Length: 318
Image (tube, rainbow, N blue to C red; front, side):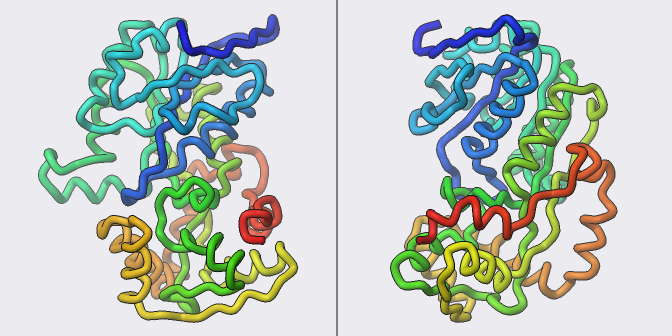
């Protein structure tokens, strides 16, 4: 297979395929490269072989021992060879228009299991015509594929700001904090958003690929809601600098995010979530705590917090 960089080890066993696409700002999109690289490291450390199908811009930075081929899961018929010998696929970045092609190619190659990186809340798409579904269309196609499946529905990923994916909240902070030591955002005081550390999300995916415990399950990989104000405070502590926090109107944030290329649907969902989690914090926090299997049960340790993430990524804001 041309385009691969190959490192092999006698201790490696099953082959896993991970897919990664360029950053998408559409509502519910996770940073497939950030999560994928963490997952690849965990799988390699566990003794698995890892192959990656990565779009241009996502081919670098993978751990040693990983095979990488440039291509896109959105055009699977042109990359049928990457599925050969694969036991399980971490399906990230698929789209409804071509997901069935990807699944047919995978099944023909003998793939046993598909783990979908879905989105928080696709069940709400059922209220709309099927032709408008996105995440739910992908999930349903996988369920009907005849292969084993697990759907992972994450909350927002802390590392989304690094890759430039959803949500819009915080997306301009690396610029405004490093340049001006300031944050200007709507819902600064009351707004909350649920975030999960990319390491924790990757660990959930690793468990779904490597064990049989989650076959046929929908896993709500959700972290607790975090206030906007506390996220700013965490970053200020991590960089050792004061950060001025200025609350602006939702319209002001909308205009700012639009200038930065965010589509209206992502802005709408971001503002809605900030307001909804702030207004119903106790109920939505309890919903997160009630999910089973809980993320901490799947990964066997407490979830990593935003303070820790801010320290790890302090250079982004200096």
